[in-house]
Image 1 (cartoon, one colour):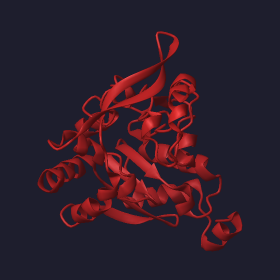
Image 2 (spheres, one colour):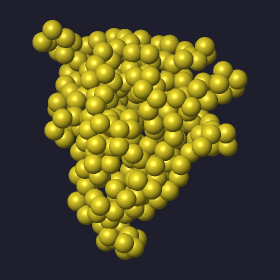
Image 3 (tube, rainbow, N blue to C red):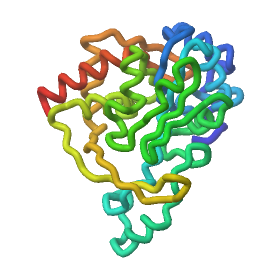
Length: 267
């Protein structure tokens, strides 16, 4: 969509102050722990773009709270599994040899959106060490959430998702649906029906670039929208507009537990 079209569809000017008012009406409070998923284009025309959204979020929760965003780098992965697009088999070993190592300070995200890319560069934001499934965090609990992110089972018990669960945090969906709701992968990991496989990625180890193999589970976000719709029939999910974006906020622990129960029942 062109910027002209975005301006046309934005009925009122969206600023940091209007966003903070919208966040408050949605239910965001000082001191909250939030894992945030977002689409800037859903907001309409924002004065200052992604920087304004990040600043509004930070001012809404304050440093007494914590903001977390997934900063995934899924292109840094085992090339034999690639499908969109696949690459020739004769390339696989050379990709393993030449893929740049994941480095938290410089490695860009993939498919996470401009708000995430902006957030990860803000002063005070730290990023976890997982070469595929990293998270970035700012605020009171950032070290507790980000530190000790296990390379095995990147969405499992030694991941930022589990630490947010322990802190009874909230999920904030800003203009995106449940298919973007990363917390539901924690339920997949906890399911007795989870299937494991060997993954790989380039990373730094003892100051040297290495191709590291590790264990992960098969994930399937395609089923999350249906589970999310069922979740909203049982639990309270606050919904409101932030700018032009349809937004939701919910308790992460309730969502993970409900998703796990559905996976155990239905697979």
